[in-house]
Each structure stands twice: as structure tokens, then as C-alpha cells.
Length: 97
Image (cartoon, rainbow, N blue to C red):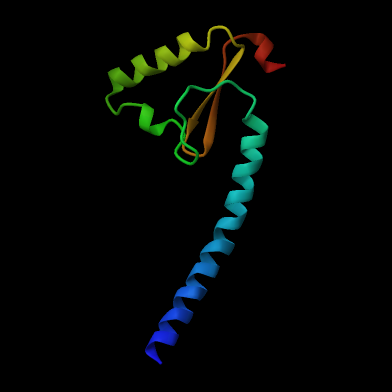
């Protein structure tokens, strides 16, 4: 009897998590479709973005952003993913169009 109750409780918990994350997942897919064509740095993880590529030290962080900037000089705009949120940088006025 306790095993059935435990299994039922786990099943309800999993169903609630799925319903809770459904709206977040749909929003994440829409953001990926919208910002997917913007150039991004390599080694981006699906849900974490570029967070593991960025150091915690402020000096090293600014150096890493400088390398991202050097990579993106040829494009009018650039996207850096911080978790599931895109950070878009415009380097030329053409990117605003």
C-alpha cells in the first residue's frame, strides 16, 4: 500500500513539473527561433548558454568579452547567451535595422 501511494505521489509530482515547465519550454523555443540566425560564440550549451565560457574574475571577464568583440567585428550584431536569455550587441548602425 505504501509503495502504491509513493508511486502515485511521484507520478503527480512529475506531472506538475511537466505542466510548470511547459510554458517555459515553449518560450525558450520561440526565443531560439527568433535569435537563432544571429551570430554567437562557439561552444554554447542549450540551457546554460555561454555561462561556462565566461570567467568569474572581472579582469578576465572583460578580456573574454574583448575576444568575443574581435570575433564579431565582421557582423553588424552579435548574440551572447547568458543562460536562456540572449544578450544582443549592436556594433554598427545597420544592425538596428
